[in-house]
Each structure stands twice: as C-alpha cells, then as structure tokens.
Image (cartoon, rainbow, N blue to C red; front, side, top):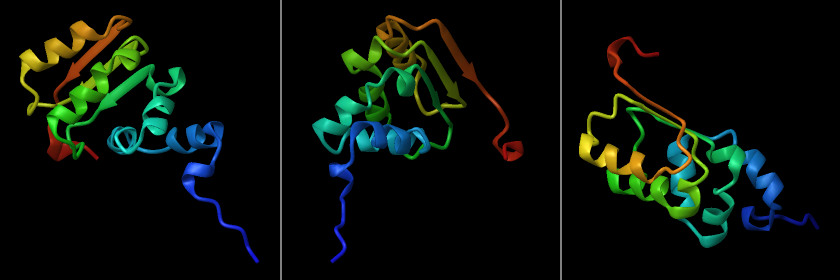
Length: 116
C-alpha cells in the first residue's frame, strides 16, 4: 500500500522550497489559509524582497493586510510595485510607512501592451 502525504504534513523546509517558486499572489493566498502557513511565510529569505505586479489577482485589502502584518512588516527591505494604478497613493504611503526595515522602494509604470 502506498502512503500518501498531504501538504500540511511536509516539513517547513520543504514548504519553503515550494513556496519560493510560486508567484506572490499565490503566496499571499497561501498565507491566508491557516496559521501555520501564515507563520511560515514570515521567513526572511522569502519576504525580504516583495514585488507586486500589475496583474496580481487579489483585492487591495488582501495585499495591504499581507504587507503590513507586524512580523512581516519588519522583514521587508525591498518593495516593488509595478503599475499598481488600482492602489491609491494614500494607501501605498500607508503601507510604506509601516515597513520599518524598508530600504528600497520602487514604484514603476510601464505599458502593459509591451510587457511580456
């Protein structure tokens, strides 16, 4: 008989290897599924540099909640927001102010028609 293993049975080290290869939208969604995954997603190597693309399929409040979560907010040193015209500048400022370790902040705009 073959023994099956579910994702919750995997070690934190294995889960971090998997998560390191998925897109930020999926990481944010995963952080909301359970306390263990949310805690795991405070990992320094994973959260040090965060890039939010223009086409991330999440609500603004979900992204804000992920970024400003107190433990995570002390880890993020670089935040890049690509053409996130749908997040008001006041909300972006509120996020940036809460990221106590932030050293690099990039707000970029580009033509989506030429983005590959």
